[in-house]
Amino acid sequence: LKSTRAKNSALMAATLLTRVIALLACAAGASAAALARPAPARAGSSAFGAARGASAVTMADASILPVDPLRVVIKSSPEAVAYDMSERLYAAAMSAIADRGHFVLAIPGGSILKMLNNTKPAWASRATVVYVNHKCVDMADEEQSTHAKAQKIFMSNWVNVTTIVLGGSGDAKAEATAYEAQIRALPETTLPRDAMGKPVFDMMLIGVGDDGHVGSLYPGREEVGMTEGWVLPVEMKSPGSITLSLPLMASAKSVIIAACGVSEKYPEGKSDAMKRAIEGVETPSTFPAVGLRRCATWILDNAAASKLSPVYLQDQ
Image (cartoon, rainbow, N blue to C red; front, side, top):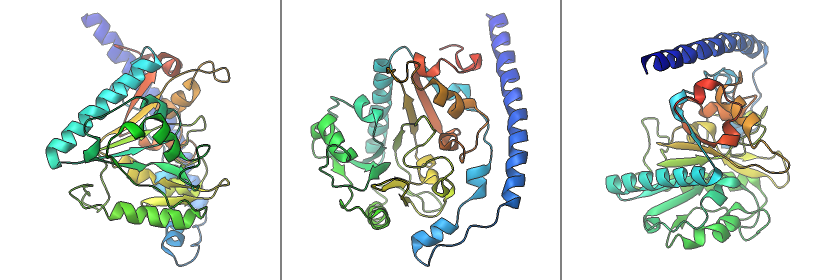
């Protein structure tokens, strides 16, 4: 047993040392690029114009150390991932309600919605749900609206839950402004703030795209580095969308990233994305999910974890 533990410790140390050396080299290159990059121009005098001009080089360009192996949980199947996530969700809700009588949860679209299928929490009437990101479409649009999909998959069973929704227009800037105003209107007894006045969600559920996007924060986009504003407009596609900022996601009391399942298109699931997100030599600019390395718990099935280094597979 002592021999096994020694080998595991040595393997972990060697793996992390290799990553650190690579990351330091990457950071040096990023720093040089940041010094050479001209300061972004402010786009107008509005709050969002100022936010666009406040792109944070330190947030977007700084290389980040690999995820602590203790933060990576590997399960045998997608069903086991969903169960583990639901157990953590229940525990977070019970803790928040016991502490101040209310629970605030942020959810994305995509596969996370399916993991919440058939849930019927008794605590729903004492909860508020905010969307991590959402397309600027009519809320009843079953093809494009995350809210409509959530209602169909599980939220109709969350009796008397409070859900903060968009206005339903196609104006991303106006929708982001209005959505942030709704969040700011929540009292601190419902949604606590930290010392800097930033909201602290009880739980933030996050999915990761194959390109590393989280919410609607995509690689190479200026929104990734924005530190001003809680909710950002993203006009990358049509229709546009809104997204919580990366600092807001990271400030949650509990951040859960879940990845599982395979398909004909992706027979190995999200293994490549999880490899890059968890231990790749990346920055938030190149792969936004790495901006959550220090705070998230990563729950993966065997397929999603299949390309991780051995240090992440020990004692699972």
